[in-house]
Image (tube, rainbow, N blue to C red; front, side):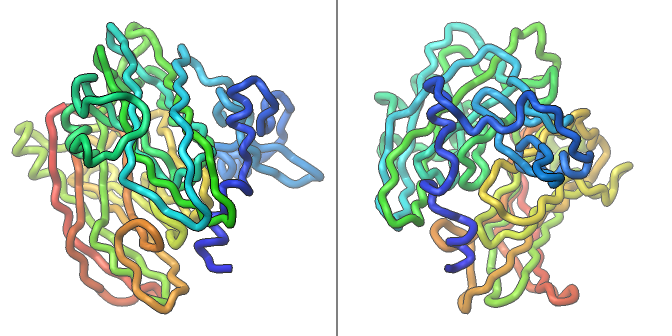
Length: 392
């Protein structure tokens, strides 16, 4: 069995009872009510994959939380707070050993007033490899809701994000994920909003998979929202992963000059949420502050790929005012005999999506890379970032 098959296991082998929970049936509830004497380190290890922690036979065991629940600081799975608005998308099918992309889906909310989303929950058993969720006005990318070909309506994620905004991104192959924002923070959906996502399915199993995605928005009253959030996205697009070695790709995204050109002052933002993204060869994703009072501070350092939810909320948020940029990168263990680049299928990705408190959203991308040498046994490479800043 290849490393891809080991990690990106068939969805039929994963817990499918989250969908049953939507129907009031038994779920992979995890430890919700039990007293859990896990250590702080064990709880943190489980929370990295958004799971609760309990001792079984004297050993700490991480367990998924039930639908409508999230992993808390105490190792327990707590109910998600907010007014729930749930939508089940149409079923989709994918054949054995098949990969499919280029399909989109939409949900027109019909909301007459703005909505403030403090948490997003995804449950899926459709062999979803990854999905990115944006929102626009209901007249944009117009047509019937349900599933449709993205190119038929001219949909792409960046133009949708600029026209409307970013709602959520799914961790690679996560069957159940909660994007829980810190208390008082939320994403604003305008009146008459339409939610759109791509559909990227990957079925490495020997039988077809038929399932659906169910999305739940948890909203709060405007009076409870102190901080409207702004998205950011960093992408190392120029991956060139050498065969049979571990490689590290690092980029230093200098933001200060662009920030000054847009606002007349230095970088001013607070970090509330970050989500790393690689495929099965990814062994590490990191984000680090550059310059200012937090120079060198590691903001996120996720080790190993496990096909679980890997988003992290920062409560309290991290004040990044005064930094000059962000250092971002990924490591990959490539056991294959061929080089691996950026892309879907058996190729790789290195991305970070997050939410900040800021008047500017930003997209940073590395489009050229060069090998710089060795760090022990690790092949190192770097590239320069181009930044696209958007008033928000």
